[in-house]
Image 1 (cartoon, one colour):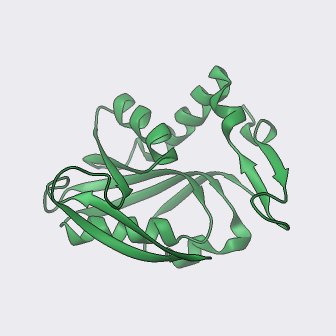
Image 2 (cartoon, rainbow, N blue to C red; image 1 turned 60 degrees about the vertical axis):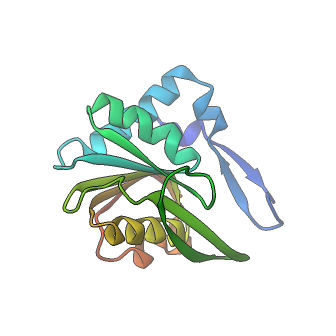
Length: 170
């Protein structure tokens, strides 16, 4: 299935000059959603790893089914203040400010190999912060898989040193 044909492009959102790639059209179509999850499963199924990591919120949408299908645990990475147990926090820069992500201190055992599943690779800042959190608690990033990559924003270069796959490239 050609998911690129199903993803809706909205010009000038959230600001003028931006082409927003809207995945809600994939999420509401059961065949498209199954195809998207299937492609992400295929991108990591042959990699030896222990856990799936998914960032809030769209990483949850794709990460949980990938974890279930591959019989792996799922670890959420959330915005600061949302996790109830002891956490490790990472502050990182956005195009228009700063953000913080957290992971539970006991979410990953030292040496465990993880894959990060997310919907979008843009500048790579969020994914790099997640990878650094994983490494800080002793995990090893085996692979990062995205549904969509916005190639012109250079996120892949910002993630040099990590194995990356993207199902759709704009």
